[in-house]
Length: 126
Image (tube, rainbow, N blue to C red; front, side, top):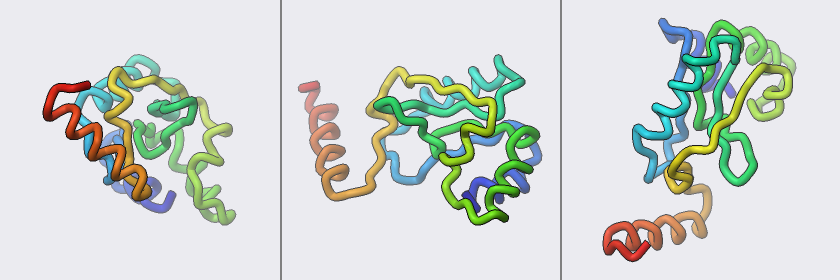
């Protein structure tokens, strides 16, 4: 959460894109979907990708003006997981057109899944 807070503090604009660094299939498509939805709904504190029924706070648009103070307060009280503060904010989730774009590599099994999908995409066997 510290990284998100830092990004929000330093951003010169209200809509801040937050993306995890371990998403090898991510393209501009899902990001454009998130940004578009956030622009259409100015009362939302954030728009988050949803994958397998779970909100993805590290694949999201955070609205600085509606989130920074709450995240800072949560951080000061000891909270480190942004997911736990989402119930306090007006947010929306969207399912991305390409769910494979949201694959992140957190474990050896994830790397194996990525490698298999990568081979399928390269050979056209999907």
